[in-house]
Image 1: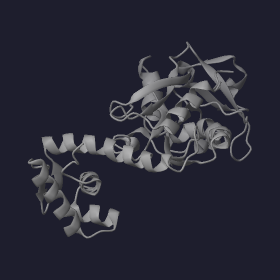
Image 2: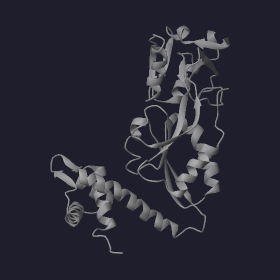
Image 3: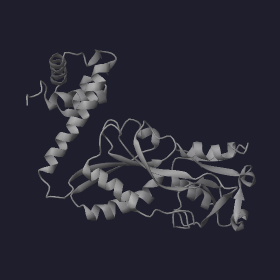
Length: 304
């Protein structure tokens, strides 16, 4: 078999330049000079007989149509090369190597403990790295290979990844234990609309909460917005308002120790799916596939 007219190093330089957007940033990421990056890309273009990128001094670097195609193949080749190296250092049937896990912040306390503890114990030579990020912050990171697998809400999933449903939960109302509605079996949105809402303001949670009211022709009165799930629980525990949340922690108290109660919404609202996603363009490594299968095997929490 004839050797290809290019090297993996040239491909890695092209990918770095495409991801970083400039030759200089790619050089800084790879700890090589910008001229080395530029020369490698130029040589790659000569060998392939196609312009792969457009370089503008003030506007950075953009891939051409051919460059986009080459970059997609290059990512797979580089991933295969990494897996080949790792496989040489693994016993038969042993999983070895890194997995970068993306996780929506409010899902992290539910999703991450069994993965880090149980899957980690079963496969001690797999390195599990965590990135907590909202859906918009995950945009593009799967495709660029920065994240191997992510756990997210079904709404607003960036790109077009492979996906599987793990479990689903309907939103609930969170109230202080001393709230007049705390003794009710269920709570309607009409009962809440004129009261103060502590809004979890992180996409897609904020959009989902507001959409529940909009479907019933209501506009809630937002008193405070916070991107912190625990801050919502703490402010509700102090009696500053109510919250609309999806995750259901077993702890019946806020971070400060104030008791809170969860109440189902009446009439029932559609459940929100929690899904595991991974890149569609590249088959997952064996260890990543094992993590996905492990996540699917867990009995996740449901409504009380």
